[in-house]
Image 1 (cartoon, rainbow over the protein chains, first blue to last red):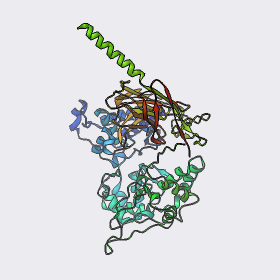
Image 2 (image 1 turned 90 degrees about the vertical axis):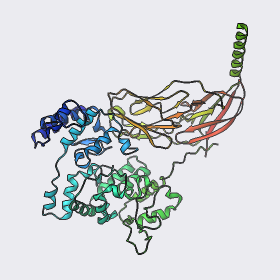
Image 3 (image 1 turned 90 degrees about the horizontal axis):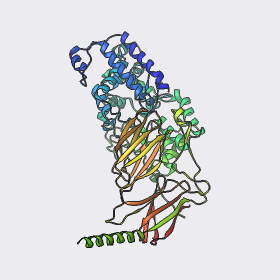
Image 4 (image 1 turned 45 degrees about the vertical axis):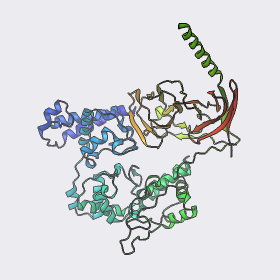
Length: 353
Length: 231
């Protein structure tokens, strides 16, 4: 089993942390921690290292890397964990580890029934993995705004959930084409407080400063797909030719172009789109084949769609559908339509002779 | 006094026996006519040592000779006031080679616990969905945890999935007050204990949903009922 090889690796990560800069934790919680009280913090950096080491053993024991990646090893089902502590608060992680389904109903992450001590140890390990983000240094540097954004994007490890080209994960929306889909102004609103735009979203509020949101939005706006077109085509095509169905290849197109960023997972819930006629929402795609004929769906994807204004004197709606016609290659449009046609309640019918 | 008691007991016994004889049996076949979907394989993307390179797609398990469809559940609801005899209180589901065994099973009268076995020695998670497709529970079962016992959801059609290995799927059909059978590898079934008369026999399959057919049951005899799927 590969996991047996991981224990020394993880211990090394912890040990490496020990020799680095030692954090200055107050000794107030020491007695509580020795008594095994949940939530108590260890007194000394040495004790932090012990806690982190125990946490790394849990990671191995419970096979966390079957789904998560730490360092350069692990699975692709869940987010990459290295910079987790930069994105989620300890309070949130405690709730999450207690029962993930309470925080995100339907999540793939199961309840491991961790004991309070195990949660402490895991958080100790995650805290040790975290690297400080040199915000001020990045923002004060000579680089362009987009370059600063790119460095911040890497520092927060946004690819832990998102994807650009062939890097990252499919947990958040694919960002390869985000510059084509979203406006910079909207990105700033979103990044400032995702929960305010979409209550219940899994996207964390990492407490970005105004300067950071500005830089990140500028970087995101530069992501217009072209550079990564080759890898994307390779991915969707191989999936089709190496035994995957047209539907699976189409689903990959739906993911890679970030369609669900506005239309929702499986096209089930369109995002809000203020002042867009008729319902101030991005249209759902669930059951769209019953509302539109295939030619109309094809035309809309190829040419795009700009929603009308509900109030003619009001502001333009933030979202419109770009014209994807020039970007979709080969069979991608056909496959995408095959997939979109499956977005409906599954028909289960007995037809007896 | 005592004699009357014994007499009463004898009468009850006779009545019970007579009722036993009053029921009939329905046998039949579930399967396809000339056209049936070809077998499909699902690609295994990880843990190849335990899971192999591919697993059969078990949504449609069809015998190429008879065209019989396995894993269809045939059931007949008992009339009001009658109670099916209690069966085992525990439904057992094993994870073996990154698939579930059995793929489809029935939770009968008295079943309240789901026991999940991990014979693979790697991490699985037991993600149980209720009728509405919502998560009922989702517990991790790391390799060292050979067995977990949890409450069965109060649902008719329960789907179990593993998110670590996303091709894994199993179904548990809750029929606390029915006579039931599951079709075998040749698509055959035998349903016992049906009351005489015209009865509505229901059928469920994961890929086809539910339907029903009427059959005339004659006490002490075997009636034939086929569900042949055509165009």
